[in-house]
Every structure is written in C-alpha cells, then in structure tokens.
Image (cartoon, rainbow, N blue to C red):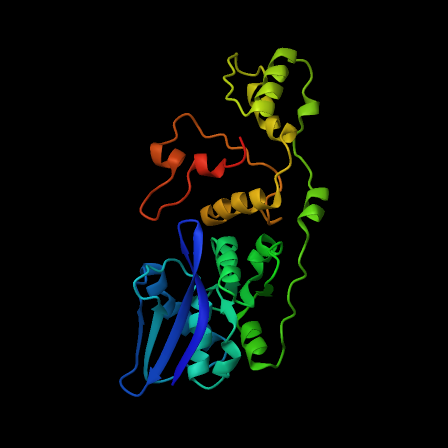
Length: 301
C-alpha cells in the first residue's frame, strides 16, 4: 500500500515542498529512507518506530520504504518525523490516505510521541504558501513564529495522537487565529531605550546622525563609559520594521534556531559579537551552513 503526504524541507534560508511517500510491501521486515536523507533523517526510523509503539499503535510488518521527493535534493533535520509516522499509519490502514492531501506536515517526534519544535518553520511555511498548499500542521512550539503569515491555515500540534485524531476525523484541530503585524507592534516593549541615556550629548548626537543616514560608528572610551549601552539603545531610534522586513529578519533567526517565544521579531536586531569571534561565527558557515552574526544583524545593528 502506498501513502503520500506533503512535508517541507530547508535549503539555506529558503524552504521547499517535499513529498513524503511511504510504501508498505510484503517481505522481510525492513524500514528504509531514501531521497538523499542526512543522518538526522535516517535516525527518524527509530524515533518513529518507538513513538508509534509507545502511543499504542502496532508497527506494520513488512518492507517499509520512505521516499523523500525530489530525490536529488538533500534533506536535513528531524522535521520529517511526523509526516513519516502519519504515512506509516496510513499504510497500516489507521488513517485514510486521502485525508492527508492538501496539508503539509512537519515536526520532530520524541519517543513518547510528543511533537517538538523545529528550525526554519517560517521559511518553510512561506514556501508552502507560495506552492499553493492550503494548510500546514506544525509543532505548537513554532505556532507563534508563523501566525502572521496570511493566506494559509496553521494547525498547531503537541502530540502524535492529536495529529492522528485530526486526520482520522475524530478530533479535528482548529486553525490558529492569525495576528496582524500592527497588533504585534503595539504590544512591543523595549528592554532598553535611547531616552534612558543621560548626558553623553556628543555620542548621542553621533548616533542620531548614524541612525538617520545609515552610517557606521566607531566609539572609543574607557570601560564603563556607556559605549555598549548606547549601542544597544540604537535600534530604538531606528524606524519600525515593515512587515516584509520583519519576515526577512525572522526567517534568518528561525534558520539559526534563535527565534524568541513571542514569535515574529518586531524589534530591529542588535548583535554584539565577542572580539574573539571566529570567521565562521561572523559570516556564517560550518558543515551545515548556518547564518553568522552579520546575517543575524540584517535590518538591525
């Protein structure tokens, strides 16, 4: 039996749609994942097997093959755990395969079936919207991050059983109420503010000119004279980010795995790398390339 379910992958700071195909055939018991999976995706076999059994589902006997299409695009991360588990249950006859259509699913599974958050939820949801996907099911931990995206239904899920109940029709999950960007701006609170700085007239004047013209600033002075405080306050006198700018910034921070619990970033980022930071930490990179401090400061300081 063959079941197909949409999922989402991550390439840099862009997402792409992945079709998760699960086939159950007679033969010696086996569980293989193909389609250029990395180590984290291959390990999903053990997480899925344990999660299904710990949630009371019988793991099907036979040869299971999971194909992540397109097969020539590398797949990274544990976000494919939940769609693979749902595909296995569809092959076992516990879920109608037709119910899995038109919904993209992503999420990491723990061994007890809990759904954990993943990196890059925002760019993946945006890619699903651009591809014409009607709804996305993702971990509830990522819900705040994507609730400002309009034109697509967002379903937050905390446990594998909730996802099974939704697709089986027993307990449908209500879509998350979207939030307007203007509402998030009105609720924003700055931890520091430029108006809190007393004195330092010359330095404040220089920062105001830099903020108005987008210039660089070099501050020289003894420790404790207020250089770091004034630099940290600089984003509070910059114009508010537009919605598109906020999406760009949050997309980068989402891939880096440092999105705050509040979700969409509404305050311009401020980054303060240590003077001993490596080249890779500043510009990004590594075995699995991640954004560096320069990218994290996009549209900010």
